Every structure is written in C-alpha cells, then in structure tokens.
Length: 442
Image (cartoon, rainbow, N blue to C red; front, side):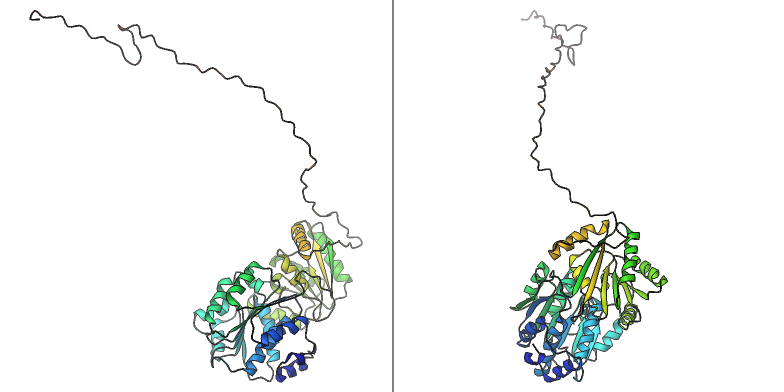
C-alpha cells in the first residue's frame, strides 16, 4: 500500500517522497489509520518493521489538522527506554518535520539538565525522551503536560523491564487531558506488566499484532557455533571476521570489560573497531555512534546498550560473542541487521556458560537449532544434557527391621523406713511423739 492511500497530509507525503519512502509496511498500514481516527493503540511488531513512522506520521498529521489543546504545552511526547533508541526516534521525527513550523527537542539522561530546561522554555511542540529524565523535569516544574495530545510509549516492555513503571505512571497522571491519545508499542503483547499498565493508561485500545516477536526473520540467516572456552570463542570470531564479507559488523558481549578487551585485540589486527558500553557519558556515546554510522569504524563491540534503536543499513553481520541473559534481547540484537529489506547474517557463539541462555532462546524461538562447524575449529563441547529422572519402575526393597525389645523401666528402689533411731529414713528422720504421762489431777 502506498502512503498516499493512508490519508496523510500532503506536507508529510512530500517529506516521505524526499526520503524515498513509497510503500507502507504492514505495521504502518494497520496502525496509521487507527491513530488518525483518534483511537488508542496497543501494537506489537518485530524489530525493523518500520514502527517508528507508524506513530510519528499520525501524530504529526493530527497536529497539522487539529487545533492545539494548549498554546505552551507540547502536543506530542514519545518515550523510549534507552538514550540510543530515543536518539534514533528523534532523528526520524526531525526528518518528518522538514518544512513544518514545529520544533522538537530530545530529553534524555546523561546530558546537562539546565540546558534541557532552556530548551523546554522555548515550548517545543514535540519531545522525545527517556522516562526517568522527563519525570525529573516534571518534578522540577520545568515542563507541564496538561495540554498533551499524543503520548507514545515505544518499546513499552523494555521500559517496564528496566523498572520505569513509576515514572510512566507519573507522566500519565501529569498528562491528564480527557482527549489525550495514547499509542503503546511493545515487542510482545504477552507481557503481564504491559497489559497491566495498558489497562491503566489506554482507553479501549485497538490491538494490532504484526507477526510475532519469536518469528524467524526471513532476511536474516542465523548460525550457531559450539565453543569450548574463551580462547576457542576468540579463534572462531577471528575466522568469521576473516571469511565474512561484511560492510559493518556488531559484536555483542556480556560485560564492559569484554568490549574493551576484544576491541583492543581487533585494533591490534587493524580491523577498525570501537567499543560502546553503558559506563560512558552521553557525549562519548553520541560520538561513538556517530562515528560508526558514518563508517569511520567497521566494527562496533558493545553490550546490550545498542541492541535497540540502532538503525544502520550497512550492518550486514551481527555476532553474539556471549548469549544474552534475556531471550527478547536476542531478537533485538539480531534485528540490528537485515533492516529495510536488506539481507543480514547473525552468528552466535555458545559455550558452557551460555548453554542455559541458549536453551531459553531456542525455546523462545520455538525452533530446533542445529550447530555449524568451522574447519579446523571443531570443539569438544557438545552441550549439557539435562538430568533425567529414573522412571524404570524398580521397586525399592524395604528391609524389615528387627523388633526391638522394650527395656523394662527401672523402678526406684524403695527405702527401708523401718528404722527411726539413728537411721536416716527418706529425706528426714521419722521421730514419733512421746506419750505424755497422766497427772494426778486426772
């Protein structure tokens, strides 16, 4: 379906044409008409499906067609779980604001609070933010949401997993206009907390599910290798980097220490790698992401901080050096490649420490995964077999215990109470009373 058929404002269609967007994706085809109609929405779709435009376009369309609720309050707020995803969404929002007389701002943690206050005093019409920092501005009264028209929760499941439920409720209570529209997007609709908070924040929402989060991505080839230990993993990674014809590649690790260690090794081989982890401040993270997007570096070694919100068409390969702890993160990691119709490869290294995580991923994907081998790098590790219960029906032989004869209880020896003179009887001596002789008067 072409975007023209969705009834969008001509100014938005012009911007879409400028960026060569012609055909709407499945989630866009279903979500945009519902949102334009003013209904609340609870939607899920797999990563890389174009859901950002599915909420950005109707939000802007409504603002162009309708009068604002308030002259100073923002008209639309988009919440994202991480700074990287917020920045990505903000970039797409800015691209659609071209030629429009609207201002937008980005409010995320890790950046100067006072500078953000100054930006909010210019009364931007659209805000992309992380929940924690936006709640801080509400508390400091540098922002009011009484006239908010559209509230968008992107990756709602991830925000709840990160513990942002109190902040989301605070924002919801601050945006109390009776005609406010809420659009909630989640990787899955089977998330208990998502359904709970949707019940609180959404009014009779339309539910849309495009595919399922565990559905295998048709544009991504997934390969798994068994590894004996850390050195074996590094040897397989080296072979992958030698053989793969990649444009850009992302390596996901479990810890910050691993990102730095691997990056040093890769740079020693002149492979142009850079590390990204959660301990960096926002300026450093922005610089690294910008350099990788501009292909200054070909390899990004990172933790799960970049598993969501990174949309780079040149990423042809993703390597899970360590398997993720949360099964949903596997889908988001793999989704960094094979975007916008491009083909991608996802390769996962599974060692003894990764086995439990791998089995959870296998169950989540509902697939029987087979392992590949590289010539000369075949390992000894074949997985960990679960312990089987013994159901062979052997009867346990119960040994009859011999009857134990009861011991006769010993009665305390009775003391001889027959003596009373110069003999102790019991605890005291029994002394009989002497008879008193009768007197003569009697």
